[in-house]
Figure 1 (cartoon, rainbow, N blue to C red):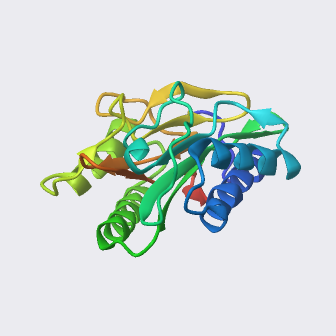
Figure 2: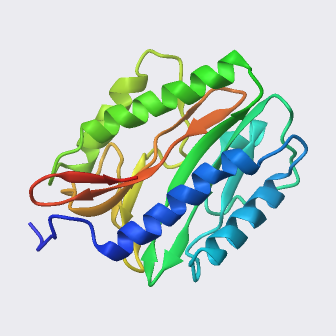
Figure 3: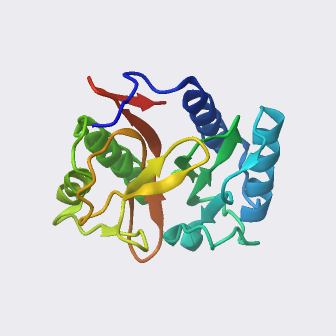
Length: 220
């Protein structure tokens, strides 16, 4: 085991709470007719105004069919949010060299399928977070997610088949991904981001867990 602090570093907490605040605030600032690019620009400006010195990767935004994909090379478009729609935002601020990473799904209008999907991904996310324990193999946490969607009809939407990755100060992915094959013991910071969908839309939630020697802390 590495020399791991029992509590998450203050810098990671600051960066992650900034990411959380902006991702959650997005649901309050969206409007029908807003484009993905407009929300991404708002998020970047808001993070900088609140202390971020930059982004470690792009702001991902997906409205409607755009929510079927979330990847660092897929930027926001001029796709507009409808008055009955769903989408997500995934933000990545940098504060004093620490990297934050948070995703939230939002729904506009009262379409029951969207609301049920949003509730389902939150339930899955909470189940996966509750399954975390110090030093567990990354692939075991992936299995907890896979068990949640088995037989449900939901598809796992991540291009690389993972539900997250390691994260820290000026670094991410160095310990690999949370996927079916990674045996790496989980210590320190890991972003957990289950992403499910169907042929019409996707829903996603993300938070960071600190795997300490005595327990796990979800930074949210």
